[in-house]
Image 1: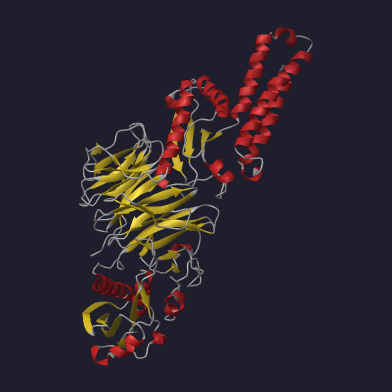
Image 2 (image 1 turned 45 degrees about the vertical axis):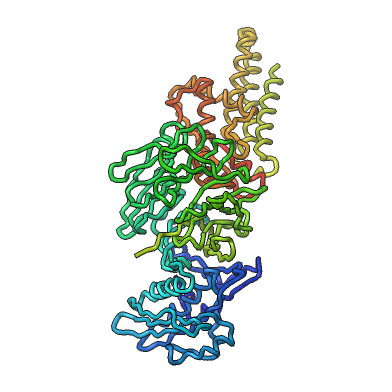
Amino acid sequence: MTNRTRTPGKTSRIRYACQLVCAFFVCAVLGSGPASAELTIRITEGADAAIPVAVVPFAESGGIPSSDKVSSIVQDDLTMSGEFNTLAPEKMLSLPSQRSEMYFRDWRLLGQRYVLVGQLSRSGDRVEARYELFDVNREERILGSSASASANNMRTLAHHISDKVYEAITGVPGAFSTKLAYVTLDRASGEPRYRLQVSDVDGKRARVRLEGKEPILSPAWSPDGEKLAYVSFETGRPAVFIHELASGNRTRIAEFRGLNSAPAWSDDGRSLLLTLSKDGNAEIYRMDIASKNLKRLTNHWSIDTEASWDHTGNGFFFTSDRSGGPQIYHKSSENADPRRITFGSRYNARPRPDNEGKYVYYVHQRDRAFHIARTNLKSGEETVLTRTESDESPSVAPNGRMLIYATKQSGNSVLTVISADGGAAYSLPASEGDVREPAWSPILH
Amino acid sequence: MKITAHQKAFAMVLSLGLVAGCSSTGDTMEDGAYGSDVEAVDQDGGSTVYGGGDRDGVSSSDLTDEELREREERAEQEAMRNITTFYFDFDTAEIKPEAREVLVAHARYLENNPNQQVRLEGHADERGTKEYNLALGERRANAVERFLIVNGASRGQMETVSYGEEKPAVMGSDESALAQNRRVELVFE
């Protein structure tokens, strides 16, 4: 991370750009070293019905770190979600920090539906935030709470407040405290450098977890958020590893002859779905992690891969080209007959269901372009969600409201976040090279 | 007759080159392999056969038509074996008709050199999903492996690995780049 990204003026550089394709750089791409290469947010498209919210700069007492302004980060989070239209602080008529200073009429005049105010105070190494959220129309406080964090962890504190505000307004838990795992590819030095990184959902605080010259693919979070499974070619062939994030310990869990790929964790964290071709061609297996026992779950001469458990934890979605081209299938249990889900085009692959059983998201070819689409599992209705044209690797946020995927912008691979109905978007380009294979973490505790 | 064989090999080399789209993007092909292939044919076939004829009139009369044909065939096959990359259509693992004769030459060579090992590296273009492409690259490598086995190579000589879309031969997203990336490479070890 560079100093410039921490400057307090950063928020003012984030502008809410509502027009389609008026993507512009919010933060200059800073010349940080590749190991700490960060993603920078570009808001490309706003939602049509964003809720107006004012995040008032928090009052401060007693040596609050000047970098990572809590209220600025909260404002960025809410803007990023695409569901809120936040008011720039310079347009505010007053800067209240508690209920007694609230004049609801002022906020009504400014067209605001909700106002967040707060105070930060420091004691020793810790900073406490006391914050209140008001419904302007009803002139009511709908949230009042406090939270604290160590002084060098203001981002964690801010994302926590964002989650609470989001939930108070929408009724759905926020996902701002979650993490992203992704892979960057830097070819600048001639030899490719692949880096598996983990960052906050806004691309900040990125840390490299694995680095090498061979490809890294398909990172997948364990349900407790403490481990990643992924495919690495570091041995010269694809093998599946489990990587404990806190310790950095790694276990090579699958290195059979042929493919070892597409890991997906079960809800209890005890087993992985894997694609293996040790028995001839790509099939889906379930591996018990402790014993390494395998159970084969598909049996067909076609390619079967990209498995993902459904919300029940009993069945799973997968890609198969048994009909002649890749399509999405679902097995309601390990032994059930597969049911074909997609029919809308000749290429549909890499299913990722939400955790409620409503939708499955996937890569969908239309004409020559690859988009992200979703199918309503009840009605079978298919909706194309993206206008970008080289889309890959959709991953659904744990609250089901947003989706991250990889696409191309002027030749480079970037990450893009959209709301789950396709409404709003921001992108996270790497400062150098490609960024791909995003995986949204579960809610972390 | 000899000329015909050369021309045939040359045409083969050329047609594979064209399939690969190397005429327009020659700079991106590795080692300028196609150009040097043709020279190799001339040296091998030309000097051996003609040279024999000029040496005291001994060799030429010893070479039967059959031997001559064999030598030419061998030269032709050697020339073909310089081609080690084979291309595929989008989302298929079907070996193209124009690749068959070259793969047969590789299979014969492997059959005659049982200690020779070869690594079959399968690749896909960047379109579609990474994991599906990984499986597709493997399917392509397996298709080539099966073809080589049917034509005389033994399974123990070969190892397959798929890189999916991770190791493109050519950067870029235009059709020519994509076509050059959908491939199986034979790497002799």
